[in-house]
Amino acid sequence: MRQDGPDRRLFSAGFQDPVGPILYSGSMGFLRLASLVVVVALAGCTPQVAPTPTPRPVDFTQPGVAQDMLGQLMAAAGTTRVINVEFTAGEARLAVVAGSTVRTYAYRDGRIAPVDSDVEWVGQAIFDPRGFGLGDLGTLFAEAAAVTGSSQGQKLQIVEYDSGHIYLIVTTYPETRPVFFTPGGRLIGDFDATDPVQLAGALAEVTSLGWTVERLGIAADGSVYADLPASPGQVMHVVRNPRFPVRDQVIADPTPGPAFDARGVTAGVLTALLARAAAHTDRPLTDGFTVVVEQRTGDPAPTALITVGTRTVRATLDGVVLAG
Image (cartoon, rainbow, N blue to C red; front, top):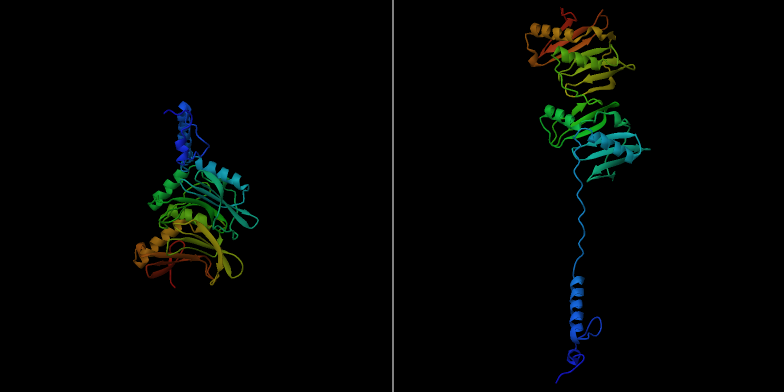
């Protein structure tokens, strides 16, 4: 027997409609059931979140890119009181002094932000790096790689090296040796003290503070140095190592002597003295050598004490070998 209206058997069987009684009469029953299916299906869906775009990598080795980023970092820091700048091919960092506190800003993952750092201010030179030679970081890296034979993990720093002298310094990881550039970006190359031209350059560097010296010489490691009079019992020791820039520091002077004008101690004079000493001692310069030019108390002019290998000779600056 046909029954119009809702099918009571559904309710008597314990069926519960979560959104209210369902009228299963005619086509409306099917529409209501279809709506429920859609609602349940939508409730089980997880909203799709658009992925965060990956920042496009920046290559600081391209001309002008590092210089531009330096300006952005300094704008973020809001000061020109800089003590350290660092660049790799893809990251940059700037450390500035605020009062006695160091703040560090870095460009990483596409943005500039303050970062934690172990850089401390212990009296090192404060400088404005915007005039330094960062116009082509790629060329600096290439020149440094030619010196060290490695381009792995290259990093450039602008930082004080010694006594207020600020340089661009390129290092590698694994570590090879640091390569130095002047603030303008000129490579500070190695030199050979037996080469007159290269020796002349080193002599000019160590006498840049003055020609009046107590001592001028070439050390066993090939360094060229000058000792300039300072306070009593002390000298300003200025040295140019074959692989490092010129350095200067005040040291004790255990054997002070009369100061003299070193302009007559040229590279030509020193290389001639080395050749004369090698011939006199019958030892090649490859055995190692040192030269000390100084004026002993009572002497009318400076003389040179030259050691080749294990043998020593004293001579005048024009090559006359002296006894004793």
